[in-house]
Image (cartoon, rainbow, N blue to C red; front, side, top):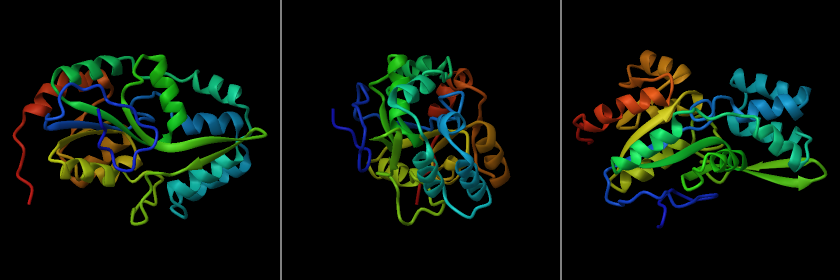
Length: 242
């Protein structure tokens, strides 16, 4: 099955049964599917003071997430085995696999959009038997000598947030294909895209942002909540877009 994510990188067929389904679910990974932020965990394990300086620059708005993450990953010192051992210590929301099954049963397609690390996402999904989910994320590459590099196949020069992955571009691509989009996220990389999605499941900082900006959303704490709200979200009438 051909996937329709724009400029695909590490992408697998989604396994969904129907290409004609009107609903696509786009879901953040770090802090949404995973219970911990992958990059923060790796920086804490293998980073240095420069990584923390870059984080502070990003928090102050002096640099975008793309520059912050590229710099932090370049500072990490770890072998592939050490990297994978650290990734394997992370946990996914225990209800996520059931949510995927429930979404599939309703004919919706689910894709992960992340401003995080493709290798970590693929490894964690495989551990749960979910490796067939389509993923678009920044590309982590081992350079040898315990050094790493991060590339950004989904960056956009016009991204207002200077993100490594411009999720708004991906959402717009889906909508041009005639798909309705339910977006699920938790943090700052989800702020812009939440205002463009047809439905939003929001947790943590994204929930606060939606409240402050008057963006209609369903508040969730976990994928158990998302399962309970799925039928209601997909059944509500859609407003016609201009």
